[in-house]
Image (cartoon, rainbow, N blue to C red):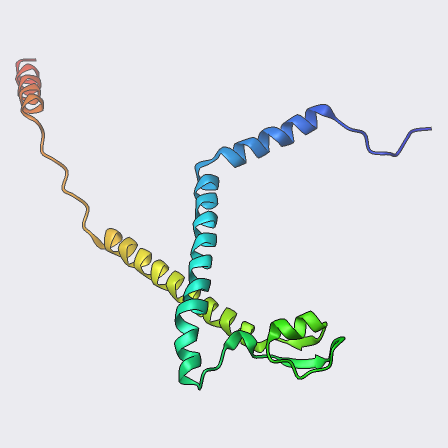
Length: 159
């Protein structure tokens, strides 16, 4: 009887590893990795911008509201509410809907998406400008080429 269990083929494993190596070493893969790292750092900066720069003045204009402490208690925890802060509610084990934190995340998303939009827009504008530019005129023949052409023409006239 033949076994129907899959068998390992060492040559096949090497081929897959070789294909992966070719994929991972390509320049585009490196560019993508750099983009992801910079994107993560940019996300951290935007989160700080929203949390530490934008939301405090907005909260102050709305009467001293701290958006991180905006939540709805669905179920009280070990100690009964009301809870003054989200941290207090979470320490008590309360189940909450944190709409203030969601608002901060939404504003962060809008800032990041708008920034990416502006980046892509400017890239596309540069690309269109390059495509619209007329191609450079081909340079005329050099002095050496002119001389060789004259010699060719003289030789063909004698023949």
